[in-house]
Length: 87
Length: 271
Image (tube, rainbow over all chains, first blue to last red; front, top):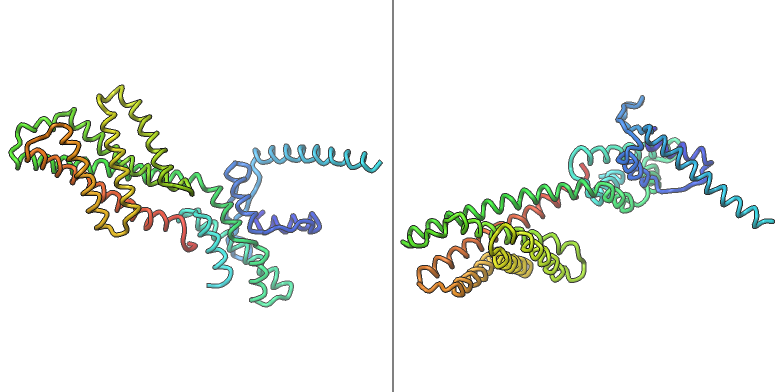
């Protein structure tokens, strides 16, 4: 996926729940690439324009799974608190 | 220049990315994003001008994006500075040392001071090299350290570099005999040069004042070292003037290199 596509996809999947400055995505992508979580390559799109495509590396995939677990744990804990507070 | 190019330009200027492939890639990536954003706006029925405004607004603050890029690529910048100034320091030490040696050789020969040939002994040359290296490293140390502080930069730089000189003297005393007074002289000279460089704008004033200050300082040291004959004092004074003038040349070149080469390499317009 390329940067703009990532934003569109996040928008679509979240039903436009998030609003952020699109430009801030690029330093974040570069940071992840430097850490070895992403790899990038320039490709020519069908329209003839050059685009930079990003994909997860195996290290990035492992990190994503780890972050997902952490997130599930965190939201689970918050849900527990909210549920007991409602009782 | 249209709004898109102005935005890219602002982002790159603030990012302090070095000119080269990296900077060109970031520019191309941001341009591609903004064009995609404009195309989306056009599909939604906006005209070209509105589409450009839409893309710029959605991109967000260029200052914020550039600050993030600057943080991420900081290591490359620091590495470049270290390599560039490491080479500059080395070249400066060699140039000043060789120049001073040649002038000294010429003075001793022309003034008929054959009894002063001892000053070309390996031990004496090593101590002179230490003095020249100390002055230059001290000057560069002050040049950079003062940039690290926003309040009282000069005073803090003097303290930090002074501590570094004390540590260096503590370490070098095991290899070089009597290195402490030489390093103290070098530190004082570096402080002279830095203060004069900071306080005076015109390079002729800088050259004259540094030459006068270091010559007076060197002659005073000579007098304390029991130099009495006029030719000996003159030779000592002229050697110190040589060191002063060549160090001033280094200072002038450094500030030129900093303003014209480094500042342009890491800022300015997009690609």
